[in-house]
Length: 255
Image (tube, rainbow, N blue to C red; front, side):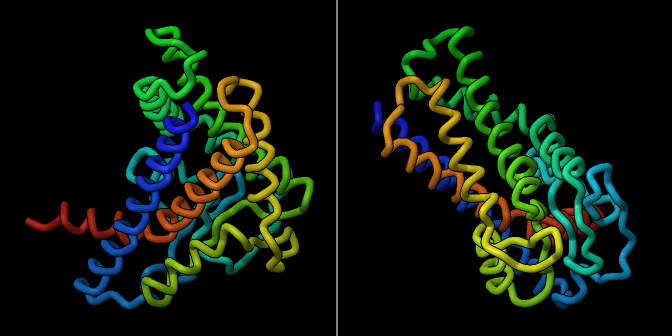
């Protein structure tokens, strides 16, 4: 049983890392072919729009990466930093948790969990899938609220990912990865990302209530490392997604 769970976690983290690395390499390659300088990726004067959550997003930018992964807490730049209210932090977590992409991902991971029979207590069939789906959705929603709303509000930290958008591809990749460990306070200063670590630790602890087959310390550590790894890969996708989306749009416009 433990082998199945650890293998599943490793596979999930591997998929996200491969996807994020491929995205970064693709974006850098396309930008080099187009002759676009890093500073042209996003200029302060580009049109922007303010979402209900107080996040600033480029006009017309999709709120989903690859049209499925929710992308509500990404800001294109740290310039003109504005402190979010607790209500706005909870709004971001709500958007991320109840987006249709989150339900699709929960169904995908739930089906994978049922296929590998990772939690025998859930059973099989439609009822079993419902339990797997519910557990997967709970993982996403609880993790989002803990890392994007509850602890950022309590610790006065900003849950948003601020894109760097300039520099070499590898420097942007390193920046995206580092933002798991560093974030901004409500005053704009850089500090250790306690919300990420404590929030995910809390989510893993809560998950013991519905993962009855895996209530061990080793499983908890595995779950925490997997979640941090997935969030790290998610940052890379957020950093380079505008480059990839721009390349796709250009390809569609070509005869």
